Length: 236
Image (cartoon, rainbow, N blue to C red; front, top):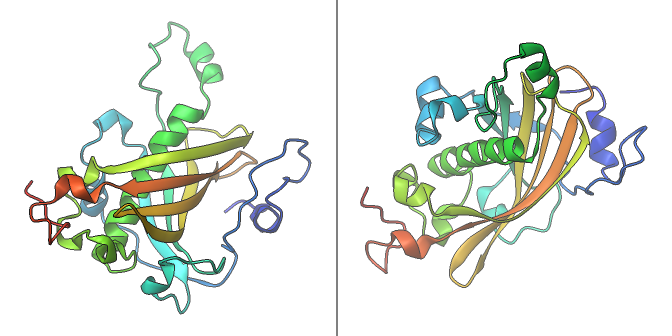
């Protein structure tokens, strides 16, 4: 992690040396945490298999949580020291939406980590957090009708959606290699659906690049019900 992270964690309202106001984060990610084993390549691919090969930016991922973490405590949580987090390493070799340039030098200069890239990276790591977290019992979506045994199916994946996202790009990030994390702060129910309030960060592996944000995710459990009494069912 970058050397200035400790500063950022405790001073999210403004980053050192910057005049730009950034989102004020609330999770205390500087508390002691337990880091789970890194995902095997087949596990990682299994979580983002529906992405085009050239858009699979997530290269490595693992889960983390505070010591003494109890999954049930994430439901309706208001404690800033309780969260479930996924950490990842990313690389964007080329932006799929840009036409190949004739001048490679110009292309290299033009490349930057922007909102499109941020959302794609967020989505991929969020799938890992939701799917691996649910399968391991660390993200309690089962309490809201999501069957952990079927969470990798297409019906579940396409019904995990972003309701709201806000990103602040503090300093430019080198897209050729960077790190990121997403933390679920709380899960709660509204209109029969689980909502997740999350915070996230992307930063250079080596360098000052930084982007921070918050997101509200929702799972439309009613869209993959086989049996209304068992809303976690999935037929494909």
